Image 1 (cartoon, rainbow, N blue to C red):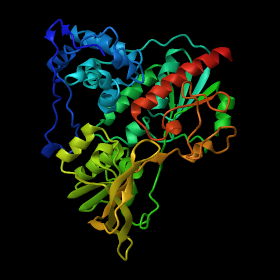
Image 2 (tube, rainbow, N blue to C red):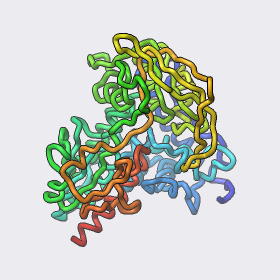
Image 3 (cartoon, rainbow, N blue to C red):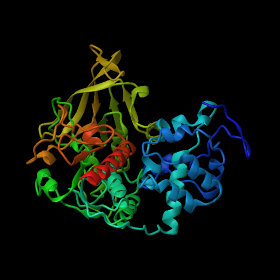
Image 4 (cartoon, one colour):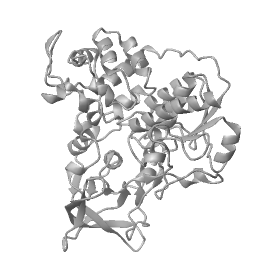
Length: 469
């Protein structure tokens, strides 16, 4: 990496411009967005830190290849409209990515300034540009001449929306089939309002529809129509159905009243609007809530439970904090809000009363042993270290798998033993001719931006496939 150079405004500041936030004591009682976004002055101050490197490594860290120095330069020039156009050239969902993308492990991880200080806050600047455009009014998009080719997208999550946008911009007729009543996939049902407001998701979906994409909600592929029938009707199909089938631990007591999968819990909170006092959505909640898991989903569930009125929320995770897959920002926010972290601990059974209601979670202490296949140190139980946590509600957030219903009535689509679709990493091509796949349905549960990257790669490959067809 090159050394930090003198910029036009002098030597770059080591520290990034802080993001205004709701105070922890206030936000733990509401579902309003935690991070409040940059002001114009904040954005200009942060953008001025960018060195505009000749060989920008940050772009290499972006799964959708945004021209990061290009858009930041336009921010410096106060051409915010030009900046968002630059971003949208490769990223159809900038307001979402600016909020939930793990920039710290991707584009920002490769920023030169990170060598001697803090990297440029690329995600915060992306969010600023997207929010600026929304306030000014999103410009109508030019729709290219139709190619006469039709593409079906199964699933309206980040992979599906990205593939749909790119294919529509190439002139193909795109139809999205969504099983739920609202588009967005995990963006709508999984990520809480305080991290990603639903209005932001709605507006990003509207942008995709402006490109000429048709959305068919309440349409379950595998039940209303099979994948084979889609292949007969469309010239190509993209599977972006995510991984919506929750995993459980297989321990005693998981069938008790008060045990949720994180999927069900967050769907009730987000899509069924339990966060809104005007909605009478049933969410069972007691004084004590235990969330099992250490990823972003676990953080989301725990922080949501706190906002719904739980007195004590504990996160139980079998490894240490350094091994937690959740974003550092989400872990810190959870701590600030008063979430209890019970690390190096693992549930062994869930206890209940005579009415089959949860009363407690029995756990055992763990210690880290040898690394597993992924390189992470495997947790090993410590004999005689059992302890009990009182709980009326338990949320299991240990991962998900693809829902098998989409594969019903279809042939020739290869899956691995975990139920995920086998697809080419660069093109998304599957074993079934004309069918491509990307995102969590291929990789298992991962990040929003990685799913978007897979959607982009697949869209490019689908376009090439249609040209040859």
